[in-house]
Image (cartoon, helix red, strand yellow):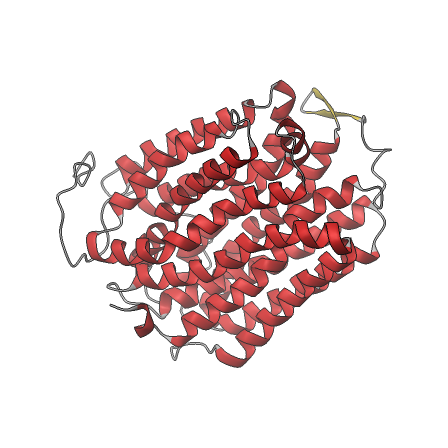
Length: 424
């Protein structure tokens, strides 16, 4: 089927997420530079000795940056089961999205007004809560506007628009910071949230359905029926690993720029290359997953994720890093839409927010852990964070290969060499 046949609300949600993602991805590049610029005094914190579980830890600039970047993901992830369940019970996806966008936009504008590291931390927490209202409600709405035969295409289109914003944001951020400064960058983030809010308000409505009688049980199903793990939980673990593989890069901006003898613009291009690859491949992968099945793309994607992640620790030229990050983005594209489609296929009626929040929560958790992990592991060697993430990606490949079976209704059945998992 043509993507033009999809519900117009899917396009509107994609456009809204594109505008919002431009603003949010700005901050991933801008906040590390902002903290290092001297406008936010952190000198008194650097070198402080902390005792965690009996172990001594020295606070570094990279660790402080990693904390700020990670808080968004942690708050976002841990709140999503609650907001996803609540949106299931009320059926008011649109209201949740609008409220979350208000929080995101307000916090983005406030960065220009604060002069304390801990106030930056507080604003990042507020943005994490805002994203927790927005993300599960958005993906649940996309899922409810789809059917089993076009779910991959729905998520492919939605993710493409979202990732256009997330991919171009870092590139534009480097230009704006160098040309206009930090205040201009924060203004762009506010503008993105504003455009997103207006798009959802004007063009998106909730599907006609009664509020779901969702239970109050917020636990995640871990054990599978006839196998070790529930397939959505297995995909969630894989998605955590994928998020870590992507997010480790941001904390090491200073080290990477020094190692490759490059400026902020090169780093923005490298960071955005992952997302630009997603833009190129999300729609064709989503449509192909509807036609040939979800599982083959999941396995190829996680298989490519391993070498693409590890190679980031050994690349020595800016251009080669761009190529490597693009391949990492291809791997993510092969996983993203099929994973959401599998969760959507398995979600019970009226519980899309709850089921899909497992994956959105997992991705947010990975994005939160990645910066902190790289901020700590870089002291053992530049390549160590990427080697650790590559090991996690390998484990994810094994889990998905053994615990996830085909859930879609492919138009064509192809006997791929890996089309049968162990236990089938």
